[in-house]
Image (cartoon, rainbow, N blue to C red; front, side, top):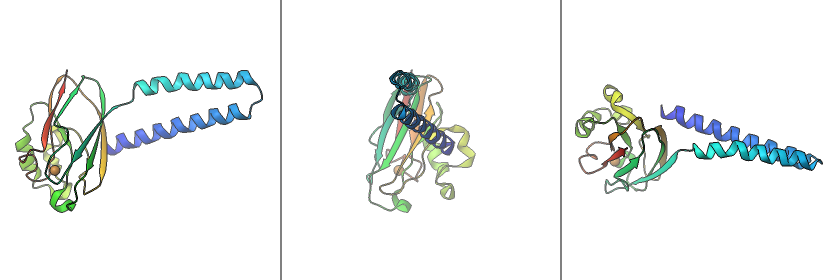
Length: 179
Ligand SMILES: [Cu+2]
């Protein structure tokens, strides 16, 4: 799911930049001033909606003290959000890996965390509980980052956690509140 979102974003970015370069090249080579004006106007018109629909970025850091820098996110139902998680710690991934997992309203964070402990080969994303997950990042080692983009489905309180063993119990959890 994450890979699909990232790939789409990259394709969109590439298409956008490609179009921009094409318009610029056309305008620069053309001797006719009106054509260049039209090209610029068209470029402006197409870029404005793209900016309006861009996902809101929430940057979160995770550290060796098992803390997220953000534990509460306020959002609107239907809003597109991009969470960028950065592991700012030094300890190796095997001892202090971090991820960010957003669950459906009503999910039990502690139960999820406990089940996730036995899913080490899946980076602590247990197959049996995937139906509780709205979105999640990769498991990150020191100085790594990852992002995930999702649409907030509806109003409600969506718990999130780091599913590395015992991290949620130590406080690596929070809530996204959608209105
Ligand atoms: Cu963690």
